[in-house]
Image (cartoon, rainbow, N blue to C red; front, side):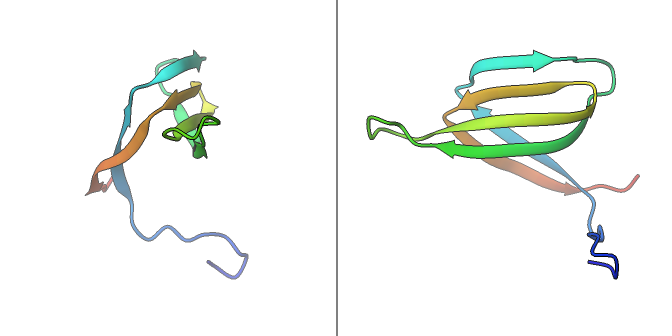
Length: 83
């Protein structure tokens, strides 16, 4: 963090996520740019004691916002990014 308590970006990367068994998908405002501000992953336990699911929320700055549930989340790859 810098002297103003802001994060300093050191490494820019592409991250490829995989969401499996998606349900309850809702997508709003999809367009040609779709700038994402935040990706929120919340674990939701099964009230019957079964396998937990995940609630995914994609908050947009410009363009799409989405929410859905899925059974698993994984990081498939991380690759360097240079503009």
